[in-house]
Length: 80
Image (cartoon, rainbow, N blue to C red; front, side, top):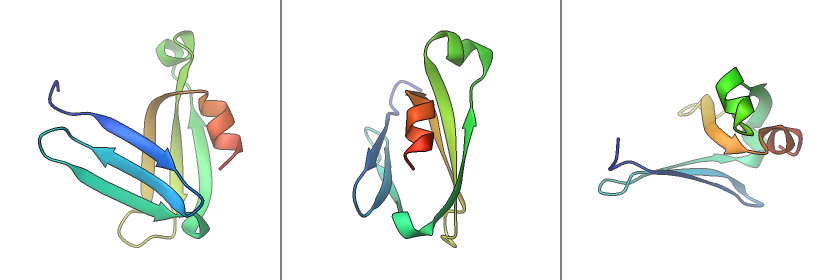
């Protein structure tokens, strides 16, 4: 939707997702809670140099976080 936007921020404390322009939501997973990651590269995204990284955590409120259509997805997944 044209009124939505998503940003991801990786800090030394955690992984943040900020969504929205008019209405904002901010989610964060502390780094020590990240248990696993999964790289997904659908054909069309791969052709554009993009991919998805699925983060699995022990956070009881946010068990999964999907980083959608990001550049260098393989590098992000390896460094998380």
